[in-house]
Amino acid sequence: MKTHWNNTALTRLLNLDYPIIQGPFGGGLSTVDLVSAVSSAGALGGYGAYQLQPSEITALNAKIRQQTKGSYALNLWVPLPHQRKAYTLTDHKQVIKRLRPALKALYLEELRFPELIPPDFEEQAEAVIAAKPAAFSFVFGIPSPLILEACRRNGIVTIGAATTVEEGVALEMAGVDVIVASGFEAGGHRPSFLKPAEDSVMSTFVLLQLLKEKVKTPVVAAGGITTADSAATALRLGASGVQIGTAFLACKESGATEEHRAAIFSKVANETVLTSVFTGRLARGSKSVLSEQLKDITLAPFPYQSELMAPLRRAATALGQQHYVTYWMGQAAPLVKETTVEALMKRLISGLSAVF
Image 1 (cartoon, rainbow, N blue to C red):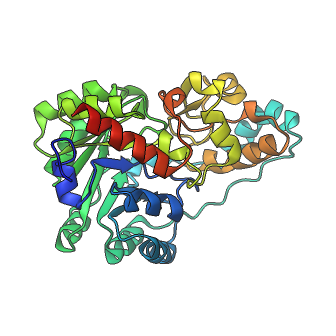
Image 2 (image 1 turned 90 degrees about the vertical axis):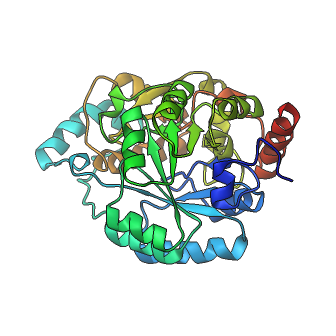
């Protein structure tokens, strides 16, 4: 039944029962089961597909459609020119030198130079459009006018992320349908694209209010939202919906490892940090030995740094040395309670229904 709180521009655009979006996780943290469970519960599930080849996106979409009739989003990362930096063998030798203490502690040999061939974004976007999900969401920039127009022709709602007012205005000027106001409280990467992420760290509710003054496009609040109370605050401040990441990441349906889930429910969740150590891009997660030891040191740019750190993450987990690993989570992680999508959605819905 539609009432005041769940009858918003977002729910009308996407035919949702509730104005709730599941954060689209990358790095293997998204799963078909998670997206399907969220979408089947009346919210918008989301799958982070930026690492997938076009054919893999097509296959993924077919699997999601088999498991849910609800609305869902496929998410990609927009590659802006300045985000792809050179990484040479000389650079690699310097990075290995800085990582030497950690490599020794984790019994690792030299890390191989990463030979990366990332998927072509234009081809990925073509696969998403051909798949015709309810929504195409994106971070780190704005797709070309041709891509956005193709989405409009195919009835696909476009959702872009902003970390500043200027980015939100740019998204509206490009004709994006929904703007996600991503505050610095949010876990994972800061999806900044007009200024460096380090200079784009406005809080969720301040960013939401400022954006509401500047744009007419529906705005979704993201960052620090795990409870019905925080979601209600966002809706009262004019948000058309909320995007929730960490609380869904903690659910058994996600692709998070048992160690990652345990970290969200442990004392390490009490203090998160913004670090670029593990991927080469600023992201929020739990404090770790490496996030502290290397916080003032520039390592490799994304995506090379992410590739280099993968063996360290695996070794630390295998050796039970989780204090070497930064687990992605937001500042409100200590408030997370549920371990299934069903339980989380039930609490959010009942809580919001009670206060509106």
